[in-house]
Amino acid sequence: MDKEIQPLLVALIAIIKDNKVLLMKRNKEPYKGYWGILGEKIKWGETIDQAAERGVMEELKMKVRCANVNKVLHEFVDEGESRKHHFLFFLTKVIPESEDFELQDEGDDAKWFPLDALPENLVLSDAWMLKNLSDDNITIPIVKMREENGKLIKFDVNQKE
Image (cartoon, rainbow, N blue to C red; front, side, top):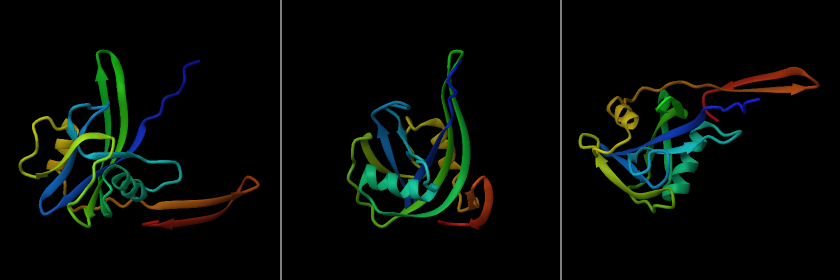
């Protein structure tokens, strides 16, 4: 029996300040050697905002505040006849406290780029998302239910954790 493979859930983190975006040059697959928006896997039990804030702190030692989830993108990367990658991206716009950062181990480099002068070797889907970035907010309610002895006994909905 084939092992079932699931898409990877990722918070893509557009770090925006003064019409500039902080991009990272990746040093591992996928997209090794390309500039891209910082991405962070969403861990079990974590909200999109929590994953974004954690990811920026772990990879750049930078404190940010989530502004909104701007887009959801379902991405497939094929090579030949095979599916190589499958992602569900939540583009999250964040506001940094400052422009200072300390690059950790995920990337070879990180730089601020003007939104109207992005690098040529930018991940293609990231380029599309940044060109279509807006202040729109996709509302993704956080639903929590409680189960006891096989019965659902509680239901809560919140906009933010």
